[in-house]
Amino acid sequence: MSAGPSALSLAASGVYGLVILACIAAAITAKRYRQMPGHWRFWALLALLFGMLIALRMLEVEEWLRSTLRASLRASGEYGQRRDLQAPLSAAIIALAGIGTLGLIYRKTRNLRGRRNVARLVSVIAALAIIFLIALRLASLHAMDALLYGPLKLNWVVDLGSSLVVMIAAIQYIRLVRAHP
Figure 1 (cartoon, rainbow, N blue to C red):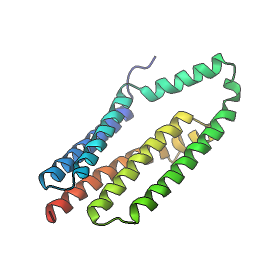
Figure 2: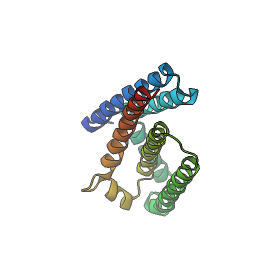
Figure 3: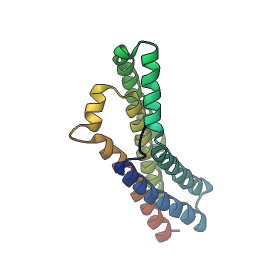
Figure 4: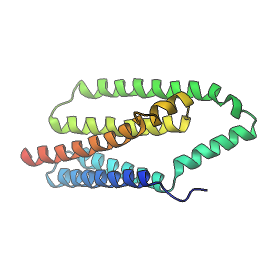
């Protein structure tokens, strides 16, 4: 049984909290400066996503899911062969994330106009990177774990880096809207 969230999870939750504040400020700015209705909803949904990420960390949902999956594999006698399941699952997650991101970029950049919309696109790609990372952590393939948790700490680089990108994009959006309503 866990003694609660780790210090790193608490720190990440603090960063997520700052991202929430930036997203709420962007939503308020979009509403106040009468941007398209989708803009304030977009930033509000991102704030909600990061609120959910805080809840996932504080309630240790990822660890619970990993433990449940491990217990299920042990009960079925397939724990020794888990890499046979994890390898294609990890490959599918990576392929889906790559194809999905490229499709999103292609679809959204064809008619993308204005730096405000660029900030929104950058923030959604960064948020999707966090969701992709969570999926990879849940798949938990040994080779992938070595990359995520090894000396480079890609887990934290992607998690915190993407969070900061969302926060910076929200701040940039606010600046752009206030400068050119």
